[in-house]
Length: 384
Image (cartoon, one colour):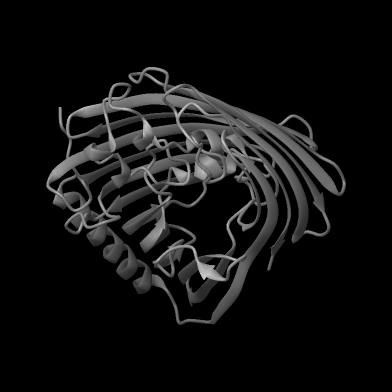
């Protein structure tokens, strides 16, 4: 049965946001303080990448985590009410160039928050399913290391799979929504035109709901519905998230594609130093009647010394209805903590693809489907 996101849902979301704002403004007192922060991350490292046919020696930005510039601010409106905004620009520090044509490609939103009622934000922002992936990960202080099996095995390019092996080809519009940071067909970690509500935390539990307006399905947009429920303490985490996106095939066309996915993730501190973590991710992608579905999982361990840490994780991807399209991989990393803001790191990554699979490693694709990707990296990360 084909499901659609009705216009009424979006109207309700916007009505709720404005009703929420007026209700809070009514009980709030005069503004008492405001502040703006400029922050960011810089990450540069050397890499040796083997794509199964050739080997490259490189100096790259974002080997561990994406370099970025952040401008954010808050204003105390009184009575427990606050205003906030967030802008994030991502760039390639090795070349001094933007990462995307969208200048604020990693966040541009404004919102209202209340200590009693939660937070409503409007604009380009993370979908709620992103947070269980992030917090169920311990590959350094920045998390989601580029050499982690979370990213290497969960990033797929099924456009390279032959038509005989897969029910979906490039002509079927797969590329229209397959370029997210985790993607086997996960929608982008960021979505345009989102209204997101996040509840306050009750007994360490919070929930989020997001609705995205399609606005005619131009490139990068679609009908989006997502949410999560999270339990978080300083030592442990458990989260569930889901996401649904309906887009045009091809982008801007008249056909329709639909992605549904969910993730269950967790992090458990066996001791203060030793942690275990992982996730189970299920997905179903339908492009004009052709379906690709399956699941992947990741398991990891980490150990924190006084001034350093090590991590290891393993991931496995299974595609239910595509012959020899599975893959598996692992990542190993070491971080030396020069301070709370600066880390030296080294990492090794390996992704093994079956005959019709072409998963990449840290953004680098194999020379051909079925090739094994290998990488070795070392670099420096600084947060300001």
